[in-house]
Image: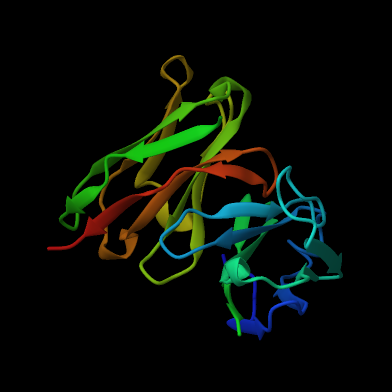
Length: 110
Length: 118
């Protein structure tokens, strides 16, 4: 049950936009419209930021947006802020194992 | 306010057992699937198991099948994870999460640390 592939790190300056990719297969990301993104600050629990590829839960800033093309999903953070510095994980539904997470991406605000 | 509070973690020897609990409040537990997710020290997230609203359907990641059992008591607003035959590689922070369907874990507890070591 291999994880989805994310870049280990992405960085950007305050105010800039960054994009994190999440590559899966035709059995998970490519097959379903069920990709989620989670933010995790050090020592804290993950927080849902995006679900069903591009939907934001109530209370999540509209600076966070999601999309998908083929087997790759993406999370874009616009207007980067210091508090956005955290680890980000994608997740996809996979029929063989309801949930599979990505390898995780550390976002650094320069 | 939705709250999930895990308990039951600790230090256990390889081959030992541990039972984790998750107390839910602020929502009707019986209306939701629930999941356990773990995170080994310095590593990423790994989904472990989930359970249907009435407990009639349970799913597990391959690495814990036959060793871990997920259960729930809706009357007590509680979720459980019975972990047997523990291995060093089971060492992790274990989170319970409300499972709103198909990769949407919308509320998480603060986690409980399980350390398997001799």
